[in-house]
Length: 441
Image 1 (cartoon, rainbow, N blue to C red):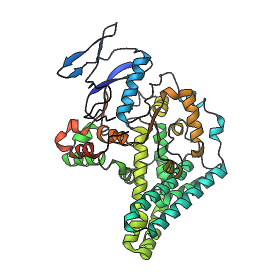
Image 2: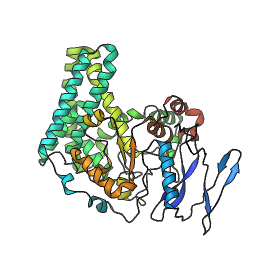
Image 3: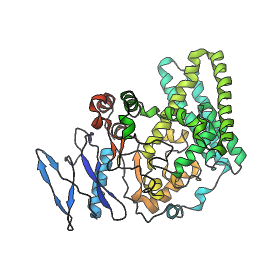
Image 4: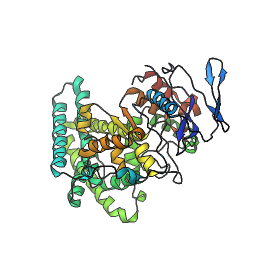
């Protein structure tokens, strides 16, 4: 089934009374199975009467925001159609405002919070051996097989990040010193300073999808987009074709500037930076001495780019979709952001094994203290107790195409406005993605 992206509007039900508001929907040039182009819905009056105004061959229905409680069948059917167009398996119902994050956490079995040293160190063994095997493949592979060796090795070294990620969340070991040492060492091959990342990542969990405070990615600000032609072009490329590597920009901008940290964090930040620069000062010249500049590219740079592909892809898939809003602090709700605004996405099994189930992301946002080896158990519990509210997908091209061609500039009413709506003459990179990216789910 083809479902290609255009720019029609649809409604989205939010809040405890399921109020209706307009929002952009993505459909592509070949329509979805319902063969309608929704421009807008109009709901008006106490009886919630609907008017459909035909225009040419497109049905146009205009929506005025009003308290409306649609039937569950209508709402479920709409979400199913939306999921098909966006590349999701399920788009969850809006979580009622009176549900708190504690309510959700209290339904999780206590066992999911238990740290198992054997399982934790087994994950370290898996990452070390798979990474070593990848380096061996790179050393032996003919040139035409090198992309496969790089893909494996970049995915394997992403497992190092997940181990450090657990250490930062205090879910790797009961010993804080062990976690700091293992986390720092795990991040070194990635040239990631452990403590700066930990400080910023903790704020991401505390402020997930909060418009200004979240330290992961934000939508582009309209004022930023309009500020200069050069910056606008860079943003279009960055949030368009280069988006699977945008974590490189995030890495550079957020983790090496001491002015971005509180005074009580500076000392630990400096220690982490010293470790990273020391690794670079010793490791990089050693690689170049043994294998030359091309060896540095083959054995370090290309796997590192592979790691950033997964870092960027996991981050944007977990928290970016046309129907998932970023909210200002006065409107933000923790349970809605963590349970209802985070996406579970299934990947091929070998990726999930090497990356230690980092894709099972909703329970991780419900409680970051859950070790990675218990995430599946926690997710099963969430499905049993809160399943109708979950956003779930299986990784596919339509999902990526939706994110990369629609989810661009922040808009309070519509969540996102695409670049080609605001600056069509400068959005050739987005038009290129629409032409060349596959559209199957």
